Length: 535
Image (cartoon, rainbow, N blue to C red; front, side, top):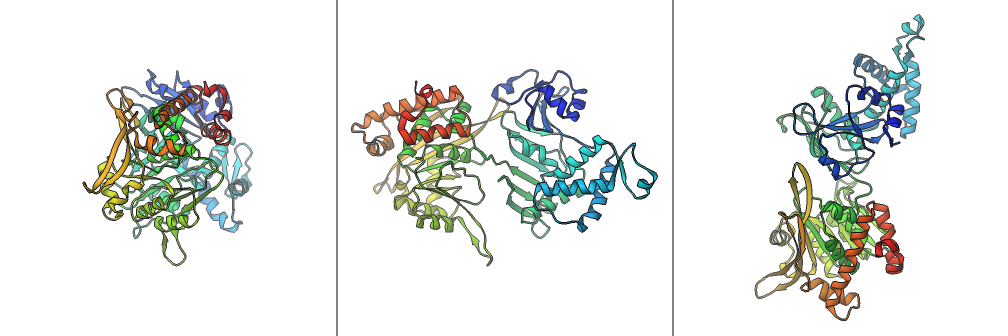
């Protein structure tokens, strides 16, 4: 449940009302947008699902905002909570094991009845039996914390609830920091009590994820139940400031391309270009540095693939989200024989299934050569890659360990480059360039490319430098669409850019509305789209 008004939030969450007694003039906002970054003074609270709320404010004489997670807590009588946990651990082994969260809550209620007694109603006999006296309010808080710590994400649970968080990071006993989609890097009010608390947390979490961390296995990469990725560095022998971890949050429904246009990552013309290219079966690499938004952009453009196409995805961790009805999702894993099923194996398997599109989460090794085998046999491929320019991308593809022969590089059609920039204290991501791969030149022993979109950081504006000069649009897409005069393809691009612009302005900014609109387009053409977006 997410409270929509402050009155409702305080009524349903007494701990929030208590918190607000010490924090005045707070603005309650049901959801955030980029305008909130410019609030002065900045002092707002937003809900992320009862009973958790987030307070963003600038305290005292500081100039940078902080992130305060508000949740039910035992601020006093920590000993009482620890005593209840101790008694539960003694009784739990004699109980039936639980299989679901609901089973655990039933077990928890049963155990709490046996080891606690409501204050004011306890008797001498109950004290002799070792029951812990609690108030009704304390009992609710204890139950919340037990569920949070045992079957959910413990200390970072509020952060995992927050849809505006991208990364969660801590080093040793330092305060946990987050990367916020609106406010950038923020210090939170959350930290581990001591080394024992931190190390127990990491051991328990990694065991639940099936990849236990230890002194013998100090570095762990794993996928959390919601799809988020966690990297753990355990032991002071490696991490000098203490054990650390980073969580990259996973979004079940990634932002659609209209949202990326609103954020400025793409222009409407770039979105229209991608629409034409992907609808026509072009292959594309999204390339850039770490955290530049490569996977987010890749997910957003999948909506431009015909919904009647067959798609296979291959990944180490599940980050690709495909809305199409025929989607086979393949993941690497350890086999029972101790062998690892790698991306290379998954791509080869996908090729045997004759999909229309193969999406590879990220090319790092020999799976890149398998991807180019797929391109040579007529399959379209989408993937992400780590390279900051077209020259470096080609060098990495043709060098070790990928080793794609340079004469095969022109099987790829488009390279889209992204950057992450810190501007006025916040993080922004921009498509910095789109390059078309034209052909391999035997004379130059190299690949001919052409930049058709570029980004001017001074103006924060994209320019379509490839108008009337796009090889992919004129020589590839126009013919596939049956357009006799290749120059007319730019009219089609402008038409689609106007549609994207109107969809963005009209608020088609969520995953479902965007995909429902594109599904209707692929079923009935432009006639299937709402009149309001057609103009």
